Length: 278
Image 1 (tube, rainbow, N blue to C red):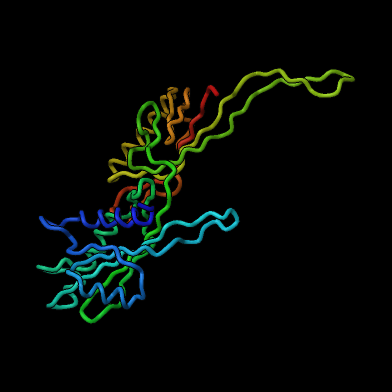
Image 2 (cartoon, helix red, strand yellow):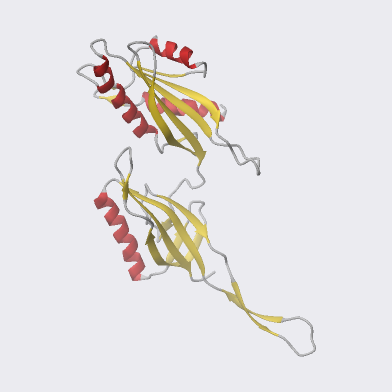
């Protein structure tokens, strides 16, 4: 199975697994070949509703100078209808889910999810699409980028930033110290090796927790480790172990925020470690 097929199949699986009450949220979930928009809308109108089509639409622009390909792009089209009124089809009713509910549930399920092993879905935008009379359609566009870090970094054996946070580990330079001297009339400089010195390791990214109380607990844990100043082993997302590390600083970047889809508490920030022994 190639990556395009695997991505589409994984997204369809997520959508097919959504439920409302004791039944599936969507009556139809299909992969659809990209065609002229009117043809896709006409096909949606013939499906059991509510319906979802997953359409692979190519790649975005990559890095031209380095000749690197761009991210995978796909669209999700959602369709709903009410025989009583268009407003019910839009907002929902007793026997109709409603297009707005479908759009919110699908976006929440797909945003940030990992498919095809290491690709993370990111919602670009979403908007209603004009369709045949009586059919309400919503389009969501997603980009998929490969994730280098698939597991949370740990300090002292714990995911200090929380399991749901997105932190990148950036290693500073490893520096060797030396004592330099020279002799009159002799070309060159002589060095006495004084050994390796400390280096900086930074976790940079975004703390994420279900609510403010959970995020407060994560930040209190970080600040507690900072105050204790105890050295420990730090293991990054690639399994590299860095011993004798202590936290030097925790810096919040900007104000606390909220995830637009699920309301999670967010805080951008940096945790700087110092590795005492190179």
